[in-house]
Length: 403
Ligand code: AMP
Image 1 (cartoon, rainbow, N blue to C red):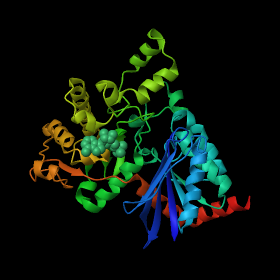
Image 2 (tube, rainbow, N blue to C red; image 1 turned 180 degrees about the vertical axis):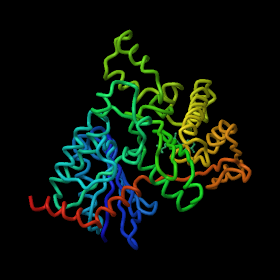
Image 3 (cartoon, rainbow, N blue to C red; image 1 turned 90 degrees about the horizontal axis):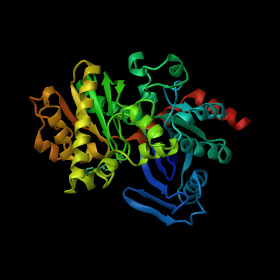
Image 4 (cartoon, protein in one colour; image 1 turned 120 degrees about the vertical axis):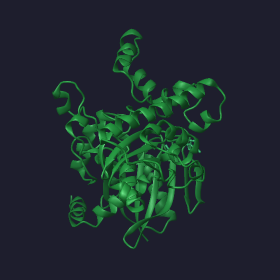
């Protein structure tokens, strides 16, 4: 069967999905991951909720991301009857240049290397499987889908920091992230609530990474995230908005190294840092520790504050959409956030909220509340399929074959 492989590579894991083509649209067939790269590598995959493989490896058998993608590729080749037509990669940073997905060749990959300094923890891992597949499967069409691209149309005031312009010119901009998630949700809204989709909408992507996006007629006009995926609302282990003066204090007064500050901001802050207990919202909700309560209160408070900011960017609000792990699964957090939005005329329907309905506001609510599950991988598969069926894309793949 003709298939598309979607790859989302991090520092210690590769998540992958296989999509078949059905009536010209991608349909998910396999979902898997290889985690514990370099420590306790473990390959698992499932199809229709039944397990296809659960296998562990010695740490030196799969020591890095290239070894991991090679292992995934050979497992697929040996066990699945698939003709791989293309691979779609999640790439966190498209920099100032890429405002849409792009077919990868050596020149594009080299260009994307430039943005490693803008996303040092993510970009190198995103690019590693691309390089590996260039070598092992040069005929394969590869597509990069960016977390930044959906936010590309932001106005100059949304896109700038108030620092000298030369920094903007070299790429210090408010990019925004989670773009594939917002693009998918915007697409779903057009299907399930077209009137809402044409209006002023805030989408809250509340997962272990979390951000919020203001959509006007389906287009991103503002985001809580900026230059990196650290800014905005608090996350599992990242702080969200923080006064730059705190970082100066840590570096100068506390003598912390830049690496130690980076570690603090990416791994030790957010819900984990505030609670001292866990980065997982479920653990905090079930804990009676006052620090867990503070972390949850802080999360809800900051989502509410940022909703006010994004409403100002939109000049009003027609709908508020919850998505990602916390947004899709926690009626309690949704209810608490809805309470914070009461001043906007939000009226939650408590029964619909706990019954996991899609529409969770009362008819009299001035703002429609919705839960829309996100699907970044499907978005990548759609983009990859679209480029696969375009003639210029085939040409690029053909040219690469010839070199
Ligand atoms: P994601 O990054 O979108 O996969 O979201 C992962 C996060 O969602 C986890 O860290 C949990 O904190 C959160 N989560 C998942 N299920 C629930 C739930 N039922 N209640 C509260 N939080 C949840």
